[in-house]
Each structure stands twice: as C-alpha cells, then as structure tokens.
Image 1: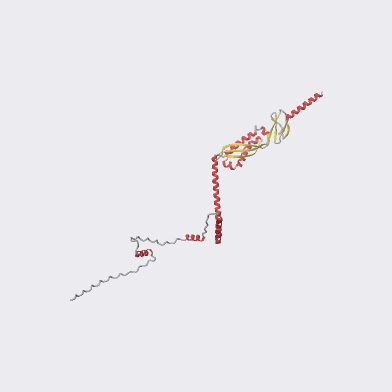
Image 2: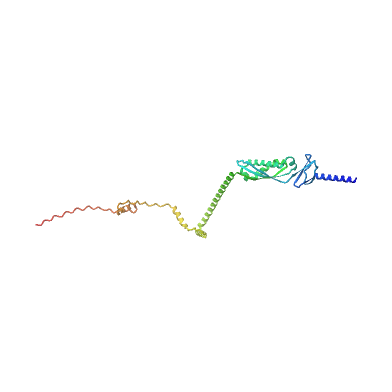
Length: 316
C-alpha cells in the first residue's frame, strides 16, 4: 500500500514537472508577451520575467520592443523638374502596442517596409532636385509623417526617417559641376573687384598723405629699390623723377602753339645751284615779318651820243 502511494505521488510529481515545463515561459526585458487563448486575446500583456500559460490552450507570442533599423531599398523616380534620380533611405521605428502589432497587422515589419517605399516614391515625385540635395530635413519630416499615419493603427511608432543618398545621371553631374564652377568663378571675380576697390581707396589715402610730405615719396621709392635689390633676379629698377611727370602732364594740358608757316621747297634748278638773287627773293616772300622793300633804283636817261670829232685838214 505504501509503495502504491509512493508511486502515485512520484507520478503526480513527474506529471506536475512535465506540465510546468510545458507551461513555463520566460519573457525577456526588451520583449512583451501576448497570450492567445483558443485564438482569442486573453488578459493583459505579459511583463518581462517568468510566466505560465496553459499548454495546448494558450499560445504566447513575444513582441520585440526595441528600435528597429530598416533600410529602404533605392527607389527610382522622376522629380517635379523632370530629373531621373535614385533615392535610398533608412527608417527607425519601434512597437509601442504589442497586442495591436500582433492582431491588427500580419507582419508589421513588412508593412512598414512597403509603406516606406511607397512614401519615398511619392516624396520624389513631389520634390525638386534642389530640395533633394539641400533641403533634406524638410523632406525627412514629410516622409516621417507619411509613414507614421498608417503605422499608428499597427501599434508602431516611427522615430526617424533619413534620406541616405541621391544618385544622379552622369550628364546631370557634369552639368552641375559646370554650374558650380561658373558660380565659383563669379564669386572669385566679385572678390577680386572688391579687393581692387579697397586697394584703390587705400592708395588714394596714401597719396593724399604723401602729398603733404614730398619726402615720403622719395623714401617709398628707396624702400622699393631696396626690396627689389634684396631678391636675386635680373630686374633693373630705374628711379624716375615725379616732377618730370608733372611737367609733362602740365605741358599736355596747355593748348598747342601755332606752328609757323611751312616753307615751300625751292623749285629745282637745271644748273644745280640757285642764283643768289632768286634765293633772297624767295626768303623775302616766305618770311613776311622780315621782309623789307628793296631800295628803288632810279633809271638814268641814256647819255647822248657824243659828236664825232671834226675831220682834220689835210696838209698842203
């Protein structure tokens, strides 16, 4: 009799151990347990630690409550300004309602992935290329709202969405490179012009200061000569007097004097030498200021012919 009691007790203990092993469950700290009894939700969410369910009646499903990092495959689309791009992103989400994640959606991971891809293609079609390249924060917020709206009913909360990369065609990259180069060249020219303007103002101030002290200009010239002579080159520095430049400037500002009348070249002579009387007459004609009337020569009447001597008488 005692042996039968001991055997029955051992059988009960063994059965209890088997039942306990089949009914015992352990929920980790980052998980929550959802119990379905005969296919229906039963009780509250099981907290982390040791818990017991009824074997063959209850079914415990563990839901991970950690933040999930899910990459969104690259999506190809056409922007609003008709540029073909490929954009990939990453979404960060976590489960906040374990029963809703188990009951309301078949696979919340797959659902979030598909919704993220669809929203990303929609964002590409509504945005321009400049927004995708420079205004990503605004696009990330819009993409997060588009994914988070349906995910609330799935017990999922979207923490953050980031656009990782934007792939452009090679032709568009070359065009953007030329645009950036032209823009930098424009900025460089503006900076050079501004520097020239500032330098001209400083030089004007220096000139005004040196005009009060003429010796300062000579000292500056000597300093320039010393600076050039210190270098080992073949440059030759010749000091040029500034007074000569001022004289030339004043001479250029004065009206030009009247040029004297150009002398006529003497006509050619066959004998090779011009007579002296003709040269004097030409000088008197070309130089009216020095012309003087020649003394008038009075023409004397021709002398009467003398009478022939009387014939001599012949002798005897």
